[in-house]
Image (cartoon, rainbow over all chains, first blue to last red; front, side, top):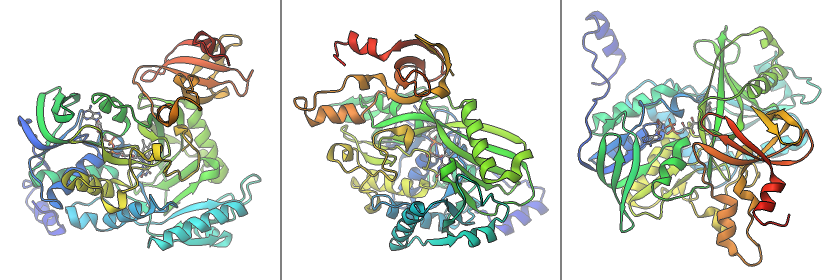
Amino acid sequence: MRYSGFRVIAEALTGHRGWKPMWRDPAPQPDYDYIIIGGGGHGLATAYYLAKEFGQARIAVLEKGWLGGGNVGRNTTIIRSNYLLDGNEPFYEFSLKLWEGLEQDFNYNAMVSQRGIINLIHTDAQRDAFTRRGNGMILHGAGAEMLDREQVRALYPWLNFDNARFPIKGALMQRRGGTVRHDAVAWGYARGADSRGVDLIQNCEVTGMRIENGRIRGVETTRGFIGAKKVGVAVAGSSGRVLAHAGMRLPIESHVLQAFVSEGLKPLIDGVMTFGAGHFYVSQSDKGGLVFGGDIDGYNSYAQRGNLPVIEDVAEGGMALMPAIGRVRLLRTWGGIMDMSMDGSPIIDRTPVDGLYFNGGWCYGGFKATPASGWSFAHLLARDEPHPTARAFRFDRFLKGRMIDEKGQGAQPNLH
Amino acid sequence: MIINHPILGPRDAQEFVYLGDAALIDRPDGMTDGIEAFHTYAYLRDNPAGDHRELWYHEQGDRSWLVVTRNTVTHEITKVELARDVARAMGRST
Ligand SMILES: Cc1cc2nc3c(=O)[nH]c(=O)nc-3n(C[C@H](O)[C@H](O)[C@H](O)COP(=O)(O)OP(=O)(O)OC[C@H]3O[C@@H](n4cnc5c(N)ncnc54)[C@H](O)[C@@H]3O)c2cc1C
């Protein structure tokens, strides 16, 4: 069924009796050509592009819970392509271009909203660094603007411009950045994949891998053994646990990141704003809630919930930047498990096991990558060679000294 | 989280800085062990869901390094040792 404005009106006039479930609920078949482990944004996008762009068939996505119950439905929905390094920027710009055409492509309203993102500047050194980054973005066609203090004031006059520690001096702006309704991304890709014959199998946890003579034969699951010619792993915070079934140790630690939503307010912030110096970022949802966050909690965790000190820290960051929100009440907080890599950048690569491929290490920034990650992973799975924009995302970069460390923090995952 | 410091008693985890897996104590020898051993040491992790022995530094306290055994699923802390004692028991000189 194609969705359209006409369809909505037609259904409204006929009592909404024509809508159908968005995807089937199939039982697993004995074997597939491709198994994708993980029904988050990246796994679903991979299956969708494998079928649609790379003409592949006999594909299954195995999800241990329900589709979209992981980080794809827990993130703060920001999309942008404002990276500095050559290994990253072309990839994220490819992703942003895919976001721009996504809703037409998969015929689903994902509420892609290019409302602009600003990164605040407080010192001359920071302005130099952001100017350099902005130039990098412009070179890769992503677009960037430097705003001075008065231009930021015109956008958000109520910010605390004269904070004693971090006075606001300007900002780096990417107008094409913005937000997307995260669940709708999972649902849109799921529906698009299902309609092209992909089996989306929920409540199916992968508990082991069958590897013979260095080649993957299939996976053990809570719904029995399922054979496969190729297996792609896209399980975000569970990367270490799943790859342990293949005897691998990864350059990844799992950490918890929290997010926050306030009660609904009248329109206050029409774009996305990051206050890196204060470990705080914020946007406003269409329902009016302020959606904000800050740092990861900082210790290894699989708990999907964080601790109070970080909530206090984030609230302090918010108050320092926006004293006006002092009496706003917090509605909800939650956590998701991040696959924090050793240089803060992702991995999309083969593994030492033939036919087993890995996609992970997305840290707290993998939502914006969803379309390009799915496309690139599908490219790797179907053609056995990396997508041109994802060539740097290799396992062996740590051994070869080719880390992609945007922040220059070194092998310390909780600092990326 | 409260870390029960072997010398100072219960302290708020906020006073500490987190480093990571306590296996980092066992650094290979840079002259003899080779680049593969250093790559494994510096970059690869077990990253378990469950009990994890990890290094915490009491920065806003007595500046001691601790080895904390903590469950990464429940955040429950079951054991706290001085890293110095752990390192010596492993036969390391420093
Ligand atoms: C609070 C928070 C805020 C964030 N904010 C942003 C942001 O503003 N912008 C941005 O770009 N990124 C953001 N991120 C990061 C982004 O959400 C993730 O990097 C991205 O969603 C990870 O990819 P995914 O969608 O495939 O992961 P997930 O949705 O987590 O998918 C992985 C799936 O694998 C499944 N799985 C795990 N183990 C198994 C198994 N053994 N068998 C079968 N299935 C399994 C899980 O159940 C899960 O559904 C944020 C994350 C969090 C938690």
